[in-house]
Image (cartoon, rainbow, N blue to C red; front, side, top):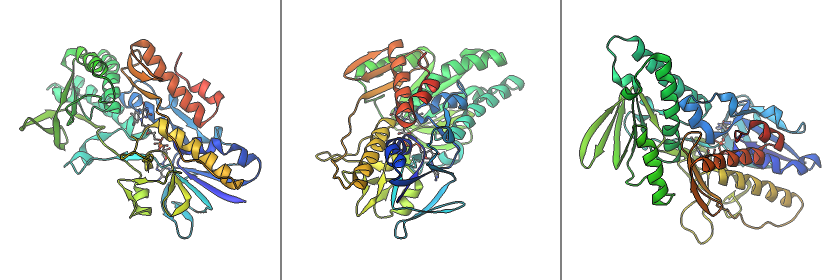
Length: 399
Ligand SMILES: Cc1cc2nc3c(=O)[nH]c(=O)nc-3n(C[C@H](O)[C@H](O)[C@H](O)COP(=O)(O)OP(=O)(O)OC[C@H]3O[C@@H](n4cnc5c(N)ncnc54)[C@H](O)[C@@H]3O)c2cc1C
């Protein structure tokens, strides 16, 4: 019986596991899934937890509740992979594998910007998200209770106005209202900035739609500053360069969403193949020269034949990779051959709080409440793809 070990219970890891159900039931393989927490969290909703608009319970699913009884779940942190001995080392144990699937997700990437790692909070996982929410509230509380009333304490600067940055900024609108009410603060005094070195906002959308998102935020008093190269961060400010001029944006809450890279385990395991935690896979999502190892999700840089650049890392591609790898392994165990992986891009939706969004999805372009509901439907679909229908229905936030 083959030993299949899956690392990471994110979108990539869990869809792989789900796709292997038949192989597991038939007793063709022994499957182990390793994850550092006892739960899976819906990464695509971390901005809502970061803003403090929802609690972790709304996006966390206990892994023991979704894995088959035949599957071993190891709650531990992966620290090393030895590809020659075919062993995964976690903090507490060693796991031998015949087939390995790496889906360890992403980490923050600060591009060497001075002080960023130490002073700005990234939206990387559920604990990091909760830390941001707590920091915002404690600063608002400090402002309300202090006699000096330092406006820095009710200022938030977000570095990065990509999808995650914009979704987080939009979530801050509701949180600002709630906290101002709770601590008796005038909402107009709160300053929220979104900064980006890029000259264009949300380039994956048509101009009209990115302009809609920008107006949505600006109408709520959120200042978007594009073409702002972030040069450094200290405890209470971002140092930026705009049109050659240096400027400082002061805030007691600094959030960084501008860069992600794959897991550090990737660079340590594949020093010659992996860069910034991502590895250019073969067309069948394996590691070149090591066909027993598959890479899924944000650790994989998949460049489709005929293209020059890898696809952006998304939950959408992570789920498709997981499903593909499961069917690849199933075919392999049955002695059948496999087609190459083909990514189907079903579009993109950027939420603007809970009631608005912009969507380029399923060949259509639309915005507003219906787009916001589409986003929640897509999220429920992703949960179904990596768990089961019952869990997806229970966790859905469409209605
Ligand atoms: C705020 C935000 C909004 C986003 N919005 C969208 C969106 O709208 N649509 C979209 O398609 N994508 C979106 N993304 C991107 C998407 O979330 C990621 O591309 C996706 O989560 C990648 O899936 P994954 O399986 O590779 O990793 P993850 O889902 O991050 O899962 C990795 C898992 O591995 C575990 N792990 C990590 N290291 C270890 C270790 N050493 N040992 C054990 N376990 C470990 C983690 O705990 C986690 O459970 C968003 C991301 C963010 C942050």
